[in-house]
Structure formats: structure tokens, C-alpha cells
Length: 535
Image 1 (cartoon, rainbow, N blue to C red):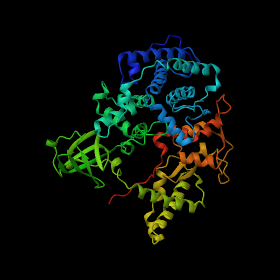
Image 2 (cartoon, helix red, strand yellow):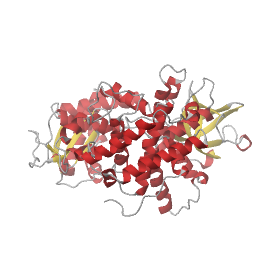
Image 3 (spheres, rainbow, N blue to C red):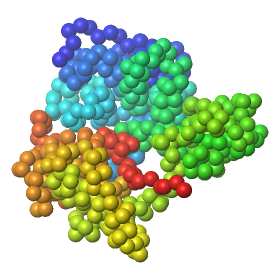
Image 4 (cartoon, helix red, strand yellow):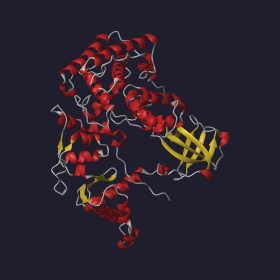
């Protein structure tokens, strides 16, 4: 519903939320004025009917103008996305028919359509997939075209943001602080990432407020600061599931001397480490649980050497593997005495060998397929039948791993396995479930809401129901492997509800992988759900 009151104007503060690296006052004033022209078009058009409030109107206007400035300034924030999308999917943008004269270095009408879809979708990640053609509304198209024509008229006189141009460069001798500043901009302030980051940060702030923590200034709050650092190194953006490190590397380009270094910066981990040795340039640490040793540089570390002692002091901190097997402290750092320290349960397996985990998973898959006669999905009745099936897989896996093991020994090992499994299941005795083996992570359980829509010859629980294709994509508890498997093998009865656009089914299917990445982000990449037992 359109708002009955006049939209507030965009201020310089609103604009600088997306552009902390401005060139000069007159340039900022130019783009703020342009934002207000775009805001007026939005507010007087059908675009506003897809927005929730004035804050979203302002955000959309700022993002569209930031896109325009990005093209003018040749800073490649948006063209990096279109280049990578073409590399992955054969065309610059999802959804739309792209003509041969599309130019990534110029403004494009379909870019504007996509950015409108993007912001609206970010604001409704838990809802149905938004129609990228906006129900083929002629008035919507006219409004987007009016914004494009405004940009086209301004193209020759719009000023470049040279400060942002220079900021996004990286010299071969840049230190960790400089790199972190650029990654922080990409992850938190750039116009493609900021809407997603802002929503995530708002959720974090609300969480701490609910817990009774007073957040007067997020910069002075250790937990908030640490969450922001986590976002820089660990979160994937909805566009192509890239982390800030990967995206910044692509902005620099493959020919840049620092391309591989930036791209290969690890995710941040958190653990507790005994300080084995104190050197002038860093510390030799040993992980409490796994006994893995690593070198921590003191280039960006807050450890006070007067308060630590070799083989006595423990640090609990966030770590990022930088380059040449050197780690850097990023985020919280807590110092304590080893006598007071116990390794938190969720950090015990941060150094597990991923190859060993995949080998375990592949053998488990072999056991699963032998029992199901090659079927990747098996349909079971309730918790008891599932627990019994799980026991069969476990025992078969044990024999594949060690052919010499006897049935007597296995029966002793798994004596109480079924009862223990049943007690920890999220469904009841009579609930039908489907068990899918994800080759990248292991067994996954799916409930009757989707199982009842699968007309598989082996499925006794099919009830002629249909499942909404949009829900299949947006419900992130469905792994991308499961979704692809049941679609590729035509194992599910799908439909498309609540769309006026008759082409939505084909639009979703043609852009299936892009949408799976968009809605799953970091969950898109399934990993083995096993741990390596520490000796």
C-alpha cells in the first residue's frame, strides 16, 4: 500500500551510509540530489507498492544511485558480479533476456530491474521468490525506464569518485590493517553488501537487547565488534555465495599480484591455545584439544606480553590464516591460565582433517546404497524404523571400513544404538520420513510435508499432494543436493502458487542454481556432518 504522507528527503548522512569514501562535498551533494530525484520517481510509481516503508524507499534510491556512481567511477563493484555470473551461467544477469549489446561498463535497464529485485528480495528472504518481472506491470517498467533515462541524461556530467577508486586499489606491500579496511568496506558498506549486512546486524543487536545487554554504542560492545569481524571473513553474500575476500579478489582481477592471496584468506575460526613460545614477531601456539601447532603473528594482535608466560598462559581468540602458514588475530582475544581453561565443545574439531571426513562420508554412502539397492532416498515409517535402518547403515559401514570386524563385536558396540537414536529424533513413531544421502554431508531426514509430494515408485506415503516450487527453493533446511536430486530425477510433484506471471515456473527452473545460492548463502556448500575422534 502506498504511504499517505510525503517521503522524507535523502540526506548526506543517508548517502554516506553506502559511500564512506567520498571525494568532495560538491560530489556528495550531486549524488544526494540525484538520490532525491530517484526517490521521487519511486514514490510516485508502482515500485513503492512492493516496499514496506520509507526506509526501504530511501535504501532503494541510494542503491540505484550508488550503482550509477559505480559505473561512472569504474570501481567495478557491480560489473564484477555480472562478469562472474556470466562465467558461471553464460549470461550477465539472472532472469532476463540479455541482448548482445549489453555492456558491463555502461548503465543498463536490466541492471536497474535486477537491483530492485535484489533489494526487495533481501528484505524478504523468508518469503516466496519475488517475480523479477514484477507481474509484467507496464507502470513498473515505465518507472524503471524513467530512472534509467535520468541516469542516461546525467551520464556525461556525473563526477567520478576518485577516493573510492583509489581506496579499492591494493599495493603489493599493503599491511594487514589496510587489507582489513578494504574487506570491511566490501562486506559492510558497499552498496551490494550493505542491505544484507544491515539486516544481519539489526538481528544481532535485537538478540543482545533481548538478552538484557545494553548496547549504547556497538563500537564499544565486544560481542557486536566480534560479530562484525565474523561477518567480514565468514559470511557469504546472497549473490553467488561469495565471501568478502573472494569478491574483493575478483574486483582486483586475476592479473593482480595479490589476487590469490586475497582469495585464499581463510574463514575465521575460534579456539583456545596454549602459548608455547613468545618471539619478537609472534607466538607459537598449540590448540588445546587437537594439539595442532601454528604461528600467530603479532602484527594485528592485542596480547600484552607482560601478562603471558610460555607453557602456562592460554589465549582464546579468533584466528584467520593469512599467508605462508601465518595466522592473524581477528576479533576477541582472552588471556587466562591453563589451569582455568577447558576447550569449548564447539571448538574441539576446528582442525579436523577434511579429507578424512570426506573419506568417511564416501564409505558411509557406499553402505547406504548397498542397503537401499542403489536408491539415494529411502522412505521409512517413524522413529523406530529409522533407528533400525540407521543401525544397518552403521554396521555395514563398519564392515566396509574394517572387513575383519566380527558380527559379535559389532553387536556389542551397537547394543543400545536403536534406543539411543530414537530418543533424539525430532519426529514420532508413526511419522513417515524420507532419508536422503547427501554425498557431500551424509544422511538427511525429510518430513512428510515434502515426502507426501513425491510420486516415487518406492514411496508408499505419496498422497497426490503438490509442493510449491518457490518453497522448495526458499526453505533452507532442504540441502541444494536434495533439491537438485529430486528435481533432476523427477521425484517430486511441483506447482507454482500465487503468481500472476505464467512464466514463473520456467523462470525459477532456468535460474535454479542462482536462487539456491541466493537463499542458502553459506549453507549452499554442504560439508561432512562427522567429526574426527581426538586421541
